[in-house]
Image 1 (cartoon, rainbow, N blue to C red):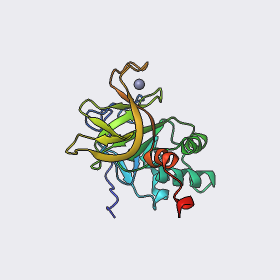
Image 2 (image 1 turned 90 degrees about the horizontal axis):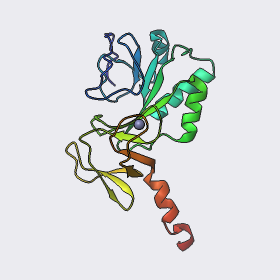
Image 3 (image 1 turned 90 degrees about the vertical axis):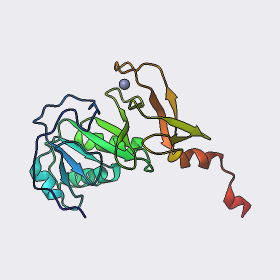
Length: 207
Ligand SMILES: [Zn+2]
């Protein structure tokens, strides 16, 4: 388990490198990160087992995987944690191989924190590959990211990967987004298993 950093630095609005946050921030906005994820410059890391320290930090943005954020939301709902400081956003880190955040989880997070939820998709080394904009309509691909499809599943052909399975299905939309960004978006992202289960023969019936 990584040692909890006691060092607190200012957060660069441009962090991580090249990635544009979908909401306005200043260098004074307090970002907390649960567990591992992309390296936001100056972010304060926390372990999911030490949430009391998170409360003391009074974060305005929390970055973490959906399961960790849901755990935090549960504790807030139970009155075990006061995270009323969260007033900017939640950033859900979905790294390659994890399931995209579900609509149910989004509703839970929204009801608990009352701030927008932005999902970012990262490679195995937590480079940001794609992210949601403020309109929440698909994931904008970063400039150098190449995706392919195999039977509907998205494959990653970038950042040293060749045909890496993502476990997700989706489609690419090249149309400019009303948010003003013109980068292609991955739309209708779903876990590949859900799509495959619907098309798979009923194995139980065969056995
Ligand atoms: Zn957009």
